[in-house]
Amino acid sequence: MNWRAIWAIASKDVSVALRTRAVMLPLLIVPLVLMVGIPSVVGLISGMANQMAAAESQMADLTRAMPPEFASRYAGLNDVQAGLVYFLVYLFAPMYLVLPLMASAVVAADSFAGEKERKTLEALVYTPTTDRELLLAKVLGALIPGAMVGLGGFVVYTIVANLVALNVVGMLILPNTLWLLLAFFVGPAAAAFGLGVTVIASSRVNSFQEAYQIGSLVVLPIVLLVVGQAMGAFLLSNWLVLLLGIVLWAADAVVFFIASASFRRTALMARI
Image (cartoon, rainbow, N blue to C red; front, side, top):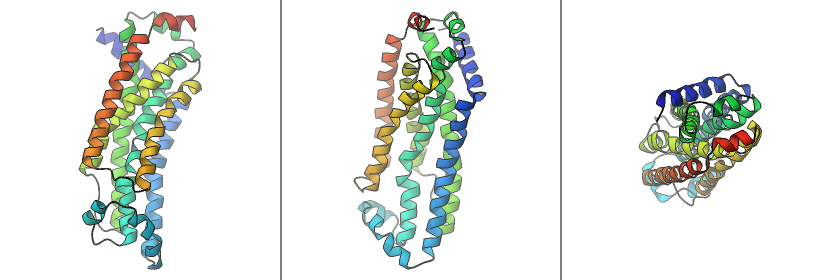
């Protein structure tokens, strides 16, 4: 492995992505909306509802949908407080995975498709690297920003969620084991899966927008997780999150095996 060339290409991809408006806007706006805006609005509404006794009956439907283990874990909270904790700790947890997945997918979409748009792909394919080394460089160039955005979002969300919880519930709720698993085990796996799919798409389409639109489809399973929890079908647990991470890492291995087996720079040259 020519690691010097691999790191040079990956570093170049990161620096170019940070200077590209179409890449940076989603990397700034989405984390602010997800990690700051949504929990702040929910906290504001919950704080106002907590002051009105009538609001507890309006939250009863939500608390009744919660699994029995949640009620025993947070016994003593009224319906509004329990609803807030349920949202911040459990219901919102799958939405966090959108962050590393989206960040890596945006940068990965700019990998080959962006090179085509900037007319720099021909120089890239003539670099002294093998096909596998070139693919690995592109993967690392997207995985590093995706993982960093995910970890940064986790830190910001922990601070915001705790401030909201202190105001309404009177206690700190994060970080716990579930969220630590999400941030350090499942999040990187989601980022790797998103970028793997997007890199494959990016090497086969001609524009950044096409690659990003195809890669964004991997968000759909996360939506199903949110809906399943909202309907009370299950409650995310440490073991369930651990299993999710193992499944995602296994899917990553399959995706990258397919990408490595099918990627050929000669095919890229044909599309220039």
